[in-house]
Length: 270
Image (cartoon, rainbow, N blue to C red; front, top):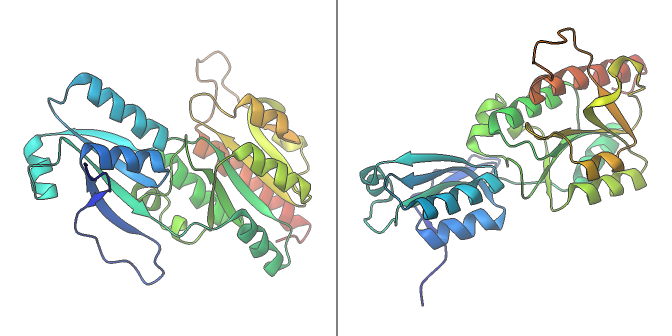
């Protein structure tokens, strides 16, 4: 019987806070199981010359897991894994200490502040996720919520893109963003999402217990999630007819999060 457990390369030392530990997983079954498990994956390496159908399979799994795919020479995989038995595929796995949604709410209570959370409804680009986390930390958010599947997880690329914010901002990972929104609303949190057909940012009261939902780069916030939200926020734009019809998700997040911080600060909520 073939062993399907992840084959890991030499691990890097963990930092004192046990925040990240990156390792190399290789072999077709181990990498497939890793990608399906919902664990954080930064990059999937596929050997040049791999059969197109096989490459397409791992590319699809990587996209679902929020990982980047790179094609490399088989010799590079051999040197990285230290074996000829890499089967043409490897992945860098990242393990972090995720919090729970309740941990994020408790962090707000401990500070005597109304909750301020940021939710990702499928942000796929790890650079964008890192930039959003950086803005969230600097604007006083108590934490971020990301999905286990269908979006970028907290990987070394995210940590680097966040300028270290990902190591300081608590992150919860949930199976269902929609169910999380329902739970937050039950606890008195007013949930907004960012979308082009919403109400102008300047006309929204963004004080009190609040959560902001940000959608994926391509399709934005899903219709199901949008229907669950209490309000929809729109950013006004001054370049009609140019073909540029939206802000980058990390830019939009920075603008909205700063406005939330400003309104909360004006009422002494932060």
